[in-house]
Image 1: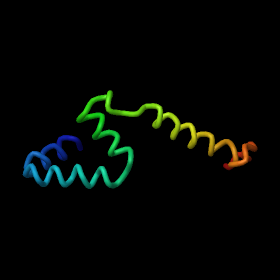
Image 2 (image 1 turned 135 degrees about the horizontal axis):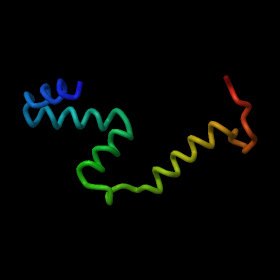
Image 3 (image 1 turned 180 degrees about the horizontal axis):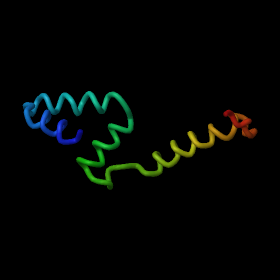
Length: 74
């Protein structure tokens, strides 16, 4: 699969590649973070913000907004 994608990307012009990267960044915050880390390195990332966002998602699965435990769903 990766070889097929690499082959397709090798055939594209620079402007087309930039457009694909731009569209991927628009699709999700995770894509944008990945591209930022890949291009600028790990120093360009606010790890605290990523950790806080993950913590909110995890807490939301186990607790209601008022802080009460959620009933597990099957």
